[in-house]
Image (cartoon, rainbow, N blue to C red):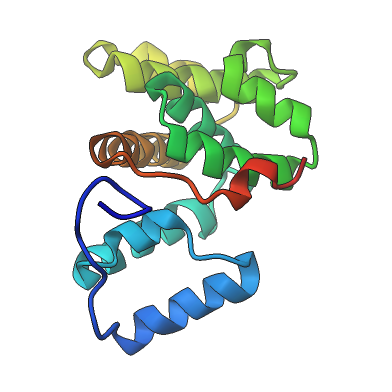
Length: 187
């Protein structure tokens, strides 16, 4: 067992230059290497795939703001009771919103958060996709269109939701622990 997960999967040694550079950039920008990256570091191909998908979904241009994408991460992680992602993405949402109370309410019960109708529709869709994907239908997509989302935005909402459902399950299966620094960040 490591401090990061309940699995004994030591990091690749040596670390490839691109991964080492990415970890150095994390340390420089964040002051830490997120434990999710540490957890994946035993298999650099899987780590690269994870980083590429995360960077594309969370940082690339989208009709969704970075804050809205973090809202999805937090709402989905709250539904799944994922300690790692609630802690890490709760900190990111606090930082992006500049409103610690908003981030806490989204984590506790997004329906009670002071969100606009567009954001509530987005999170309602994400939560339904998380809890009952078999029940998704055209009326769910149409509700997002009526709230102002394009079909590309609906794809992005769905992709972010799906990514965090996968990540939440992996974190739960491995008992992935959040970096302690996240708990007090942006409060």
